[in-house]
Length: 314
Image 1 (cartoon, helix red, strand yellow):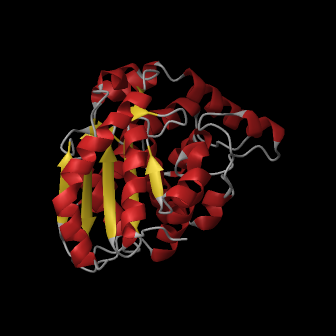
Image 2 (spheres, one colour; image 1 turned 135 degrees about the vertical axis):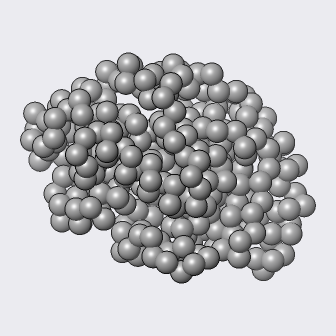
Image 3 (cartoon, rainbow, N blue to C red; image 1 turned 180 degrees about the horizontal axis):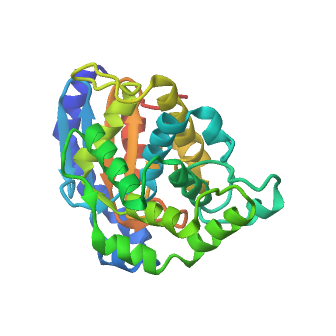
């Protein structure tokens, strides 16, 4: 199906598909371990697709704000690469999927030299947060927000203070990870200031449209598709997209690669960032999560779209 025909088909059918696939939310549960996230509506489902032509399609609860959570890890990785370069980043984090849950510390102890396997699990993302340049946690977080706004083409994304405080007050597991990394001499910065950056980046509030626009930049290898200006070096975008394919959907990344086959990154607020390389960016919100921490309705919807429009890279 040509892209013009596909977008017409999407325009005609997407609202009905969203309403039908909303039923899958009943199979999941809204995250409660960060108390502020527990207020999200269980049945919500929304999507925005942003095509390189400029065409935008939204359906369902696409206007509902949500926090990036682990989706932010893609963009802090990119910013750390731009700040420090590949050598410095990959001295501190690996390049391999783990097969473990996103907040596991198992392999930090079992596999030497005790550095995180990749930058998209919590341990790796905490280390990446420490590599962002800035004079203070607030300055580093401000740089991350500015970067997100630039990629979204929108001044709207900002830190949700309620979620930020909720994360900071309930982060015993992440504190354990960070202190373990500090003890292993993988984390060079002080623990609490580093965690403060991490909590702030996870609490950046966005909409599906903003996430889709960010995904479109990645789909276009880091260049703004409408101005041609390079926002991120192509090499770093390729690194980020590789991690999205291999690690982006937690320990369901292999299954997602087989069933959907496009780069994606999920977050426990129910968001999904996805992209079809060279074509479009996708933002999804569906707060009810499956047992792997991914939006259950969102994953089902992406599988439908990928199969119908032959999006799989494989």
